[in-house]
Image (cartoon, rainbow over all chains, first blue to last red; front, side, top):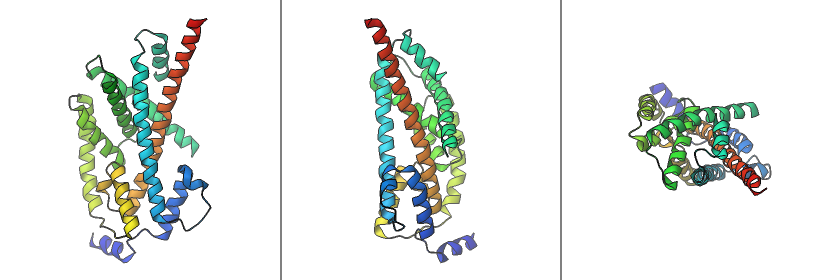
Length: 92
Length: 167
């Protein structure tokens, strides 16, 4: 355990360039905005983290909105209606 | 990469059906719009976490967090109990990895990221945090995509039915 600790503190504790490049590459595949930006190896760690945070927040907000929307849609669905049957068959 | 993503979505759908049934049988009907919305959100979050199969910090933290809202549901309590035990062991390991220092901008945003990823506040190791984040994002995307599809299908069938009625 003490070995691990000394290993951690000898290698620079901040995000290394390699880690940053790796993260950026992976995130480029996922995040819409960063992918469209000018290809640059020197993307600031701060910017990448910010974009990631924004992305997560947006996704969560969307899940919330979709839950609301589904709730409203289902409200007007009655048990025996054809819509209910389709939804049931879709989920089954 | 695409195949894996489809598998994630399929897994999510399977779990969502289960969590929907689970909640449905333990909630008192009728529900108002807000209660139903919360139930949908809850079932969706539990499904997303369950789809990951409990092998990440974020999925276990999400189950644990959602579990507070399902105090009376026995099945949820079971998932929760398993998740809590696994997480307790994990936490000790994570804390021992030491902390890191960083420039102000990066530090501030890393803290923000930690607050956004479930269980992130328990992770000190930066590598680990990044891996958890990437994993979490994939599942979050799957959750959104599936829910969007269901909402769209519902609208579509509704229009079809209306057209039929109007003819």
